[in-house]
Length: 135
View 1 (cartoon, rainbow, N blue to C red):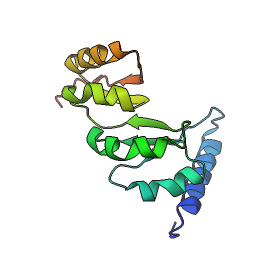
View 2: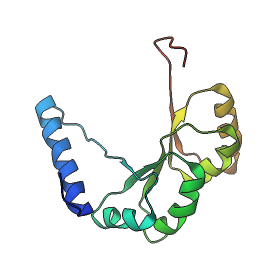
View 3: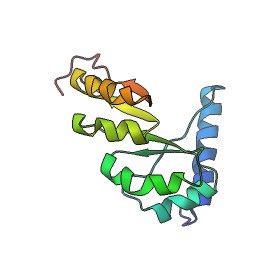
């Protein structure tokens, strides 16, 4: 897609997802997480206006700098942490994100559990190394 219009690009992505789902015979809902890392708030706002409601970031500090203001007029937005999380950022991640997609070690689980004592409990996705790969 060559258009510079974010809403048109989003519509094109949604159409491609719908076509792929139909070809695969899928009828269950598919959720698009728009990865907004490295993009300023001004670039994200047109996607919000076009109806995108779930966004992904991979850096806690970057997300803290732009998402509180973006979410204020749009309380229905959901924010996912999609990169590796350092344990020392667990409290900030719990406070800001609705989903954490990167639980990959016991020390992080412990840090998140402690941070969740605040009462906020984002959905967490656990990464499991079923192939016994060294990384």
